Structures are given as C-alpha cells and as structure tokens.
Image 1 (cartoon, rainbow over the protein chains, first blue to last red):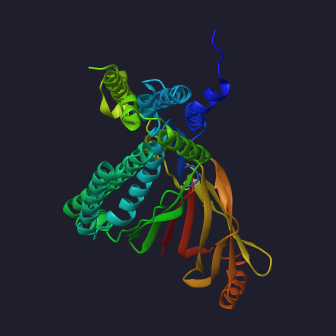
Image 2 (image 1 turned 30 degrees about the horizontal axis):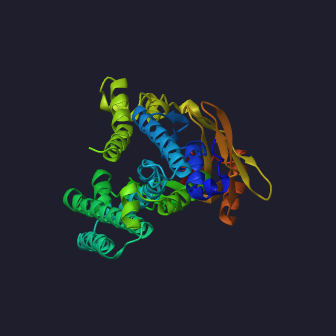
Amino acid sequence: MDKINWGKLARTINWFGVIAGILMIVLPFAGRWWRLSVGTGAMDLATSPFGFTATAFGQTMESTFARYIFLGATISIMIAGLFVLLASLLPKQWWSARLMDFGATKVFWMAIWLVVTPLIGAYIVNNILPGGQTLTIFVVGAVITIVIAILFKFLARKFLKKLWSKRLMKLATNVLLMIAAMFIVLAVCVFAVGKFLPNGVQGLVSDAIPGGTVSIDVPYVSGSATTTFSMSMGGGQASVTLPINMGLMSGFALAIITAVFSILAWVYHPGPPEEEEKRKK
Amino acid sequence: MNKEKVLSVLLFMLSLSFVVVPIIAAFSAHGWDPMATLLGDSNPIETQFGDLQNLNISENMFSVSAPTQGPNNTLIINAQFTSPLNFSIKIKDISGDGFSDGTRIGSVQLASEVEFPPNTTKNLSIICTPTQEGLNYIRDYVRLHGSLPQIQPKNARLSIDIYGIIVEGTFE
C-alpha cells in the first residue's frame, strides 16, 4: 500500500473552500440577517434568505409561499456548501471546478440582494413615490453600466489569461449587470408613478382625505426614521406617526465572512481539466 | 456529450429545482389559491382591529368627577375611562386650556401617561394650573356656589400610543 503523503495532500487542499463550505452549511442556522420594525410591536420583521419571523400587532404572520422558498434556499445553500467542501478537499478531480462554480458565489449574491432590496425599496418610497423624478438619470445609468459591463467582458476575453483574474472580472461584470438591472427597475418605477400617480403619493392622500398630507421617510437598510400622515378634521388636526427602525443583524456578519471565503476559494481553485491542460500547453 | 457537460446540466437543473419545486409545492398545498399561498390564513390587522367596526361606545365609558384642590393652587380633575379595545393603548398626553362658562381658567395637563391593557378601566389625573384671572374666577365661584367649578378642556391636544404608533389630535 502506498504511503500517503499528508504534506502534499494538505498543500493541494483549497483551505479557503474548506472554511467556506463549513460556514455555508452552518449559515442557515446562524440567525437572521436584517430586521425591520414599525413602532413597538406594530410590525416586527426579521429575515434572511433562509427564513423570516414576522409579527404584526402581536399576531404572528405566516406565508406558505415564503416558507417554502426559504426552505428551498436553505437546502440549496447546504448542498452548495457540501459541494464547495468536496471540491476543496479534492481539487484535482474532473468535477471539482464545476461543483466550486455551482456553490462558491451563492452566499455573495444572497448578501448583495439582501442589502440591495431594502436599499432600492427605501429609494423608491423616499424619492420616487412622492413624484417629480425624471427618467433620464436612470436610463442613462442603465445604459452606461451595461456598456461598461460589455467592455469588461471584451477586455477579459482579450487580455486576461490567468484563471483567477478571469473569475474576478466575471464577478465584477455580473455586479455591473445587477446595478444595470437596479437602474432599469427604478426607471420602470419612475415611469409607473409618472403615469398612474402624476402628483405622487401626496396627490393620492390629499384626494382621499381633504387636507391630508404625508411625509414619508424610510431608512436606507439600517437606521431610524419616521413617516407621518396628517389630516384636517373639522376645526381639528390629526396625525399618525410611524417610527421605522431597520438594522443588519449578527447573521449578516457571518454571511459576509462566508462570502469572502467563498470568493477567495473560487478565485484560488484550479479550473476545469480542459482549462488546466490549455494552461500547461 | 461528455461527462462535464452532463454535470453542468445536472447542476443547472438542481439550481432550477430549488426555485421551481418550492413554488409548485406552496401553491399545491393551498389548492392553487394565490392569496392563501402568499398571505396565509391569518390576517393580523383583521384579527386585531376587525372588531373596531362593532365597537360599543357609550357615555358610561368616560366619566369626570368634580375637581379637587391640589398643591400650589392647582386643581386636580379625575376622569375615569374604560377602554373598549381588545389591545393595549397608552394615553401619553392630554393638554390644552381649561374653561368654565366661557372663562379661561388656565392650562390643563395630564399628570402622567397611563397605559390601558385591553378592556380595562383606569383613572386619568389631569392637573389644571390656573392663571391669576382663573384663580379670581374660582374664588368668586366658590363664594357663590360653595363648590369648585366644572372645567372643560378647549384647544385640547391628545396623544395616544398604539403599539408604538403615535396618534395625535388637536380639537377646538
């Protein structure tokens, strides 16, 4: 029986991937990533890509759809973690690079989407819903980002030879495409508000309640703000003030650590056999 | 097709199944009813506030006793309030001007905020701080009627806390 060369074996293992794989398997059980609360118990929401807990006025809110989607994401990330772990332990196998490609960027994208979704939502509520925004900036933004992404792709194909630089460039291109998608979503929102709410939410409120005004302020991902609805009633005045709090939670810190290790593992990992052969030649 | 291509296709299908299968399973679990699938069977707002339409509000829920003399020439107005609501509220502030027969006595202010658990009765202590004119009026009233005058609030400001949402109103 051949003697196992432990030192050589240890040197071939992708250690970033081993750490990333273990963290990915643990991540769904490491708590929620982001929280939102309105008032004190009027609404509390804590969420991550793997689950959510929501209560409104002391009652627990349930959604079968959300529960199943989150279950799918949980199983998906655990399998991805297992794949990253296997690929990292046996990086020379023909399937190793494919399994790494499958799993390594998942947590990165989940973390990005978890930040982007409330960010874009707050921007729409604070700036687009009140009305008065023009389409130009968002359309130009989308076009510029797409052009840069195409340029990145072209430059990567033309000049980048190393696998790690190609992978990093692919990641940067995908981030740019996601930013372009954000601009497109914002442009669609501006168009829809201009078409169906020409005077913004303020116009909608004052049409529904004579003398009614609304002052919307929602925090961006993390922080506190208050939204106020006011109305005139006979000789009096009434207002409803909603304190809104948002914040990133401890689970998100672990997600960032996992994403960093996953990306390092992906960049460091040897490519598929045909790429490796090409490189050797 | 080589084995690597097969693996790529299988991994793509695995990714797709983690999105498609939960959606199909969720909808089929609720008999393809989109509202029940997305929002569930419970509606917290309906559960908590649905009864507000059938709320039985009567005059007996609020009673004001005759004012009593407090420290430093103040008057204490004790009001008893029975909350008909099935959720907690907190009366944070009642303030305004105190009037008696068209004469401004002074300012009125809730002594301290009072929390009302569901369907409970509690006392609200409102302090009236008279002006010099108000004190003269009270002195004359007591001399004539032998009791302290009834005080009605005007230009009142009411502030209620419902689950941290602040509802404020000003009334003439």
